[in-house]
Every structure is written in structure tokens, then in C-alpha cells.
Length: 166
Image 1: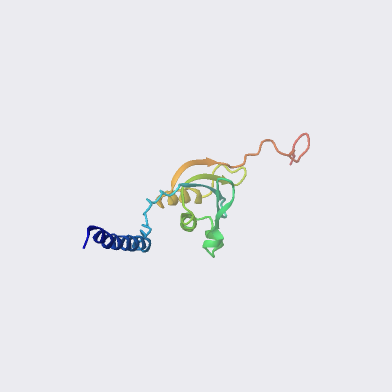
Image 2: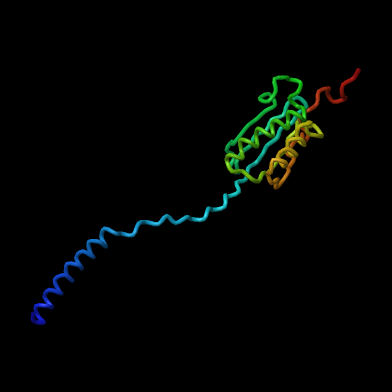
């Protein structure tokens, strides 16, 4: 055999192997590797908790920062006894139910606004119990604000110019 014949024989298998290699490369595409992205830390959502406490009832209304309602719980929703609606124990149950509702939404820090009945010097008995329960549940309380309405003058009192006489 001459050198040329040997070269031809050697070259043909090389071409075939190249084609095979090319076909194998197409078949053996690298599979996509699932890259595990590090989990982003949950964004701390802030909410406003409006607490209205009178000596007859306790209302808790949770809104987001724009004012949309997230949860609303009252004393009547937690007890069937009318006389207990303003009780600190019932206020703790109210706080427990509120915390369950807003933890699911990702709320971690809260602003608290307490309101008593207009003209009353102090809020009802449930306000302190609610704040204490919420702090125990793990919420970060950023601010506590008293938003009780104060009458400033108001309408003219009855009795005339000289006042009411006996």
C-alpha cells in the first residue's frame, strides 16, 4: 500500500468520526442546571392598628399604610356575653385573632392608634391588654398615638343667658 492509499483510508474514518462527534454533541446538549437563588429576606410590611375602646365595647381595625382594611375584630365577635365585651381578657382574645390574620399577610411592624369615646379622659380597659398581647406575639411596635377626639367649644349650652335656674 502506498502512502496515499493509507492517507485516504485514514482520512475517511476521521470524517466519519467527526460527523459522529458532531451528532453526539447535538445529542449531548448540556442540561439546564437549576441554580438555587438565595431566598430574599421577607419585606417587613407595616400596618396601622386602630383600637377603639369604650367602657362597653372594644374594636380593633387593622389597615395597611394606604388605608385598606386587612382585618377587623370586635368584642362581639369573640364573646357572646354583652357585659364582657370591654374586658381585658376579651381584648387579649381579640389581639390573638388579629395577630393570626395579619401574620399571614407578612406584617411585622405596626403603628398603634388608640381612641376612646369622645370627651373621655382615658381609654377603656382593653387598650393596654391589646398592645401587650401584640408585643408578645412578636410584632414590632413603632409608635403609639392617642387619637381621642376632644370637644373644643361645641354648640351653645341650654339654659339661656343667665343659666339654668332651679
